[in-house]
Each structure stands twice: as structure tokens, then as C-alpha cells.
Length: 362
Image (cartoon, rainbow, N blue to C red):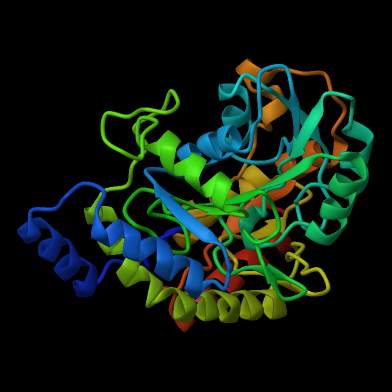
């Protein structure tokens, strides 16, 4: 049988290994000069034009980003349900309530009209997710937020380098969070990066990540230990040098798939959007699970089902809210391999397999 094609594959080279060795030999392992350099280089690389603060995970970034933006218990933050649970978890951890709104069927991101319908007098913020690497409709979302006097927060966990009408994701809201988990478009091994619209928000994120203190033993707020290590930052700095080429390869792979797949619905790209294809997500209207199983058993191709259980049906958040596009996407979406490690033979095997199985009604 052909070699297995994984749905995702972290890329770690000799440069990352050498960087980790350098840090280990330096004796400075915790948050230090590597973290500071990574923060500055990340902001510059993605053209964010704002301070970035490194943390130990994407979830930490969302949590303390919300805290730093003044979100409090009893308030509401509008979020999608079709996303990883960390989006809603981070809101709940502040004591605020995640309010679920439906998605746009093309982009899988929060639908502006659904946001407007979900706003109440308790709404303090809107947190779109740039899902699968496609930017949410930030121009419209920012206008809605301004009209209602609420903040915008960006979950850009999967969208390093994505943009809308020339503005990079992470550059629209009070803060934006990028995940650096191993399967993301770039990694630091584990970690997150928070882009901050103002010096005040950046200072608060730095306080909250470091037990509430800038000066040792002078704690200003009740904080957490959400620091990134210099080991992780050193990996991230090397990945920054490679991520643009990887993104270009993802986009090239996605273009090939979209041009050749039949029987499934490829992901459209909104006008003015740059999609970075963290996932290449198609719709399978009939028997998505059967197609995924057949890809694995008959062609040795992995795939991903993100997210078969929407947040509003998870135990901590159970709600009877009506989200028809979310429910439909949860039934139909299947993510095919698109990562930069794919060879042309891999791509052709994916196309052959999907077309054959979709035609056969697998």
C-alpha cells in the first residue's frame, strides 16, 4: 500500500534543533531575550504594526487577552459555535458568557447578520474566528462593533498571514491571538502570540502572563503563569523564516485541489481575502464520515473532521440556540491534506481518491 498521507505534519528542521541547543547551552531557559526578539520579529513579519506578546498557548492568549481588554463577569461576548472549544472556554474563564451566533456558509466564519441579531445590552465584545485560515468579514464586523459600542477580539489561531483588503488578521481588533501549536501553519512547539492594539492592552497582557508583575515581587493584579520559554521562542524565530514559503505551498496545493476535485464542494475565497489554508475544508453533503473512512482504508489518506460537535452542544455550553448553518457544516465538513510536505504524487492520489469515492457515493 502507498505511504500514509497525514492530514497535518509539523515541519521541524536542523535550524530549529540548533536554535534549541543554543538556548539550552546559554543557561537562559525561561522568558528572556529570545522571547523579546520573537515578539518583535513576529509583529514585523506579519505587518501588524502593533506590539505582540508571547504566551504559553493560544488558549492562554485568548483568556488573558479578554482579561486585558476589561471583559468581566456577567458580560456577553458573541462567538461562533463552529470552532474549537478554546474560543468559548476563554470567554467563560473570565466569568463572561459566550453567546453563539451562526456562520457564513462559504467562509465558515461568523456571519455579520447573525452577530447583529445576537447583540443585547450585555454584549461587550465580538470574537470572530478566522477559521481554517480564511479571514472573517472584519470590515463589516468592525462596523457593527462601532455602531453598538462594543469591542472586537480576533481568534486568529489558524490564520498566520491571512488578510482582508490588505489588512492582516490580528490587526483589526483590540487584540488578536495566534496559536503556535505544532499543527498550525508555524509553531514554537507550543505557545501563542497576542497582538495588542494599544500599549495599555499590551502592558496588561504582560502583567497577566507573569503573575501580575512587571517588577519582581511588586504584583499589580492577580495574574497567571502564562509565560513562553526562550526554548519555544527560539523555535518560533526559525519558523518565521520559513512560514511564507510554506504558506505559498499551501496555497499552491489548494489551487490544485480546487481545480481537480469533483463530487465535493471546495472552499470558496471571499473577495479581497487572502486564505492561508491551515485546513483545506470541503463539503460532503452525503456520508462525510463514510468518505473519510474510505479515504483511510482504501487509499491510506488521512483527513480531519473539524468540528463535528459545535460548541453550543458541548456539555459546558449546552444551548437550544438555532444555528442551522453551524449544524450543517458540522455534518458536512471534511478537511483534506494541504500541508507543505505534500508531493505532486500525494496531491494526485488525493484527487483520484476523492473523485472516485465521491462518485461512488462512499
